[in-house]
Image (cartoon, rainbow over all chains, first blue to last red; front, top):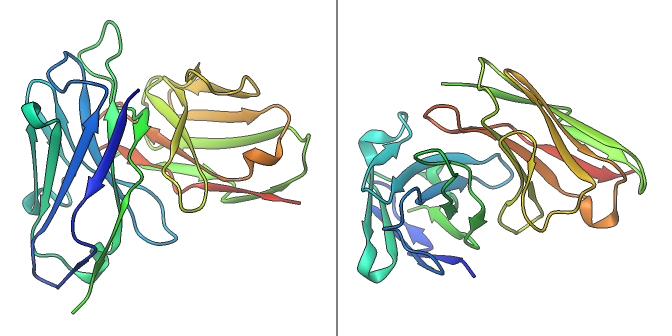
Length: 125
Length: 107
C-alpha cells in the first residue's frame, strides 16, 4: 500500500524559505519510471503543479516558479524535499505531494495516482 | 504552456443523471490526460489516465474519452458519493497543467 505524507511549517513569514518534506512508503524512488511530484492549491482555487523528481534524479519545475524551487530526494529515507524561497502571501495554499507511477513502455507517466493528505501553509507576517 | 479549459465550471444534477464534463487543451496533447475527483478538505483522487483508462478501484460508471484537444469525463448514473469537484490534467508536456475544475452540485 502506497502512502505519502507532507510535513513542514504551517506558518511562514514573507521572504522566508519554505521547506516541505514528503515521507512515503510502499514504493521505492529508485524503481524505474517512478516519480514524486508537488502540487499546491490556494484556498478555493484550482490545482497548480510545482515540481517533479524521477527515480533517476531527473527534475522538472514549473517555469513560473523555477527560480524559487528546489526538489531533492533521499532514497534511503524515502523522502522528497521541496524548498521554496522568498515566500509571499500569494503562496498561501495546501501543498500536496503525490506518487507518479510507471507506465509500461514509457520512461515515465506524469499522472498522479496516490496523493498525500496535504499540508496547509499560510504566509503572513 | 498548454492551457486546459473545463466546462461547465458548475453543474447541477440529480442522482441517476448522466453527467458529462468537457476539457479542452490549447494544443494537441494526444491522449495524455488524467481526470481527478476532489471532495472538500481532501486530496484529489485519480479516476482516469491516458484519457480513457479507468484507474483500478474506480467504479465503472466513470468513463473518459477524447484525444488531441477535446476530452470528456462521463458519469453514467450520478451517485450521492459523486458530488465533488473534478479536474483534468494534461501531461503531454511540461509544465503539467490542470483545468480550472468543475463542481458537480446537487440539483
